[in-house]
Length: 348
Image 1 (tube, rainbow, N blue to C red):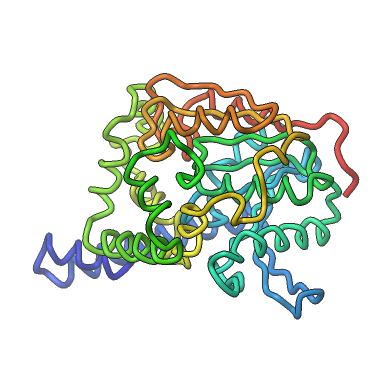
Image 2 (cartoon, rainbow, N blue to C red):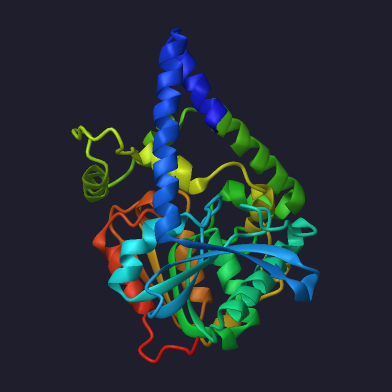
């Protein structure tokens, strides 16, 4: 990603000193951002001896005395997404726990794509045991939803029964109301091949297209409220040289290249192939927030998912987009985390 940024600077100027200066500014900002992250988010590496010393990275953020919640991030999302949630976690007295998925950030990769879900489930279980958390609420975004559902289905006794999904991904292989192209790919193309193909295309596009173009595309259908929230968070008239843009934060939060094709394989699979069924979440109090302008979490597919899941309540947010859910652009999303509060917290 840094190399791609360098190419971006080269397109804009022929003066090497300007390129060096711009890169230096970016590196300084990244250093300060990392220092802030290290101060606000506790990062830990677990060596799971019960599974041959498997390396699992996780992080915690929020109120350590509050209700514990497991956060399952979106595709490409690193533990750094916890910083996006930090204020909301503190507001609702929640303690966020995020486990880096296999192949992400140094967590050991899964043995094969279809074992990705089971590996995540056992990694999360090991972290809960390490932290001595008996039960935790569930928060998931986009592609993290499938992993969250699998964990709840397999280990309901380790959950508080509170489940919150923001802009959830629905498996097109299961959903008759999903986008036609995705349904065709899920039903007629080899699952592993689809994940690898989409992963390769995504990597190629990330290298060819500037981050500015990507962010503009993401926010094209953003509501006025979401655009205002971005403007408030990233004011353009600041004279602070240390301030960052939405593009820079997006790049930093999503991190460098990961083993995303494994996650994409999961996204194109059937739930039964992944070892769980929707009706196995009957013990969960499920709340789903979905933007009606979301072009990634397809609203008709989310409505189908809400009907398939027991005890699910769906809230549609008018004019809200996918970035609105992932970056908490609106008080609706921030306030939705109150659903995860447990007044009788588990012993830790």
